[in-house]
Length: 296
Image (tube, rainbow, N blue to C red; front, side, top):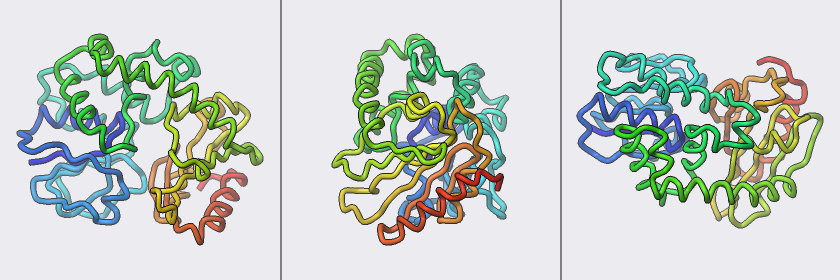
């Protein structure tokens, strides 16, 4: 039996909860949604998929993304919610020996971006937010760390977790990275009628940092579009959009919008990919809908 989930805070907590409920005999498989949608991942009987699109080869499925809804019979639960972890916690409420109430509550806030400006600019004041910033899905080399965080969350309190040597080192690194990330955002972001477009395609290495920082830098914008190459071959482009958590003017459902281009997501965030040859048309179409700001 194996857990299949994505490497973000919600996925980490999904794995934490499922490890306690099920007799997991294989390592966690960490994958991005595009890998499930493209059937690049071998899903097998016994697999528990969480916080990812459905695959009919799995034995259990838990998710909350609007665009992942399916008309199929499966074990588990799908519903719109703040996080997939929250769904799992409710589903198996009586099976946990450890109290995860606060962990799940904070994961709900983090995954649905219901954070304050202070928590974005001074994340050390909230240990759950700070931990979430150390979990990034853009480097498979971090799998050992993701697994370590799962183990820590099952046995330790958050105050002790953020003082663990590797976690503390990564927290310090993220704080330093944000200073560099801020400069990249300022250099590669343009404003279009209340929408910020961050184009990282000119960069050889995609910078990482606080995903909400762009909204504090450009407070008059209500949505951000981030553009980057899928890999170093530079033939495939990923477009990500997200509502500002400070200026909540955006009425467009991000998941519904990117679903038109084969992507997925939920109300406040979504992403899709396209070939470079159709990028301009795709970008302009998405930008037009965001500028019209009509609920879809």
